[in-house]
Length: 274
Image (cartoon, rainbow, N blue to C red; front, side, top):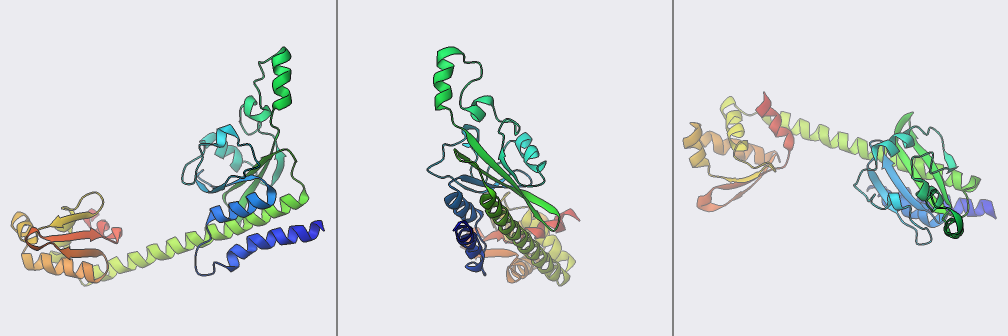
């Protein structure tokens, strides 16, 4: 029966990959499945300490020192270093060894004594923690951090955690590859359009970029820019058209005010550094 239960739980995680062949699996979705099946809070943390996914379980009393960690935030660097020092799954790890306070680890202040201490000791929360490193191809990509109060983690829980960490690792690798592919595509686009851009048009692009704000947006009056820069208006217009045609700029006419320009491919800024 336990084996069937484990199989069902791993299938729930595996289904996230099978149902998202053409789109990315959200790390929070994986955390949600882990949280549900292990009655735990779960976080996916990148190698740099960024929270990529998180899910809280209603049956778990939150670790106070983890409450501020939401998706997109960064955990304490010292805590992340301790996570990265874990090279294989550690189940039922001690919070004190990870650098959490005595109060967090035991639910009450160590300095309390006598009757008050005894009273608090009876109410304290005993946390069980599991830390699973995320490795793919020998590269450390992050950490799966799971915890709950009460029952400790057993062998089935460890298997499920390591399976989830593998799925997370595969998603990280896929995301990294997609980012690299997109970066390569954008670089080829910029290089391609610059190959058919004359020197004067390249100067025109530099002049246009200098008029945009830090977000790569702005309304540029090409006639006025021509007067200010000494570059012919024809060259400026041709340069903007080429950049728009290649998908580097997004443009919209604003009548007498000029042309609204937004940089789509930020690699175009590299020409200003040459």
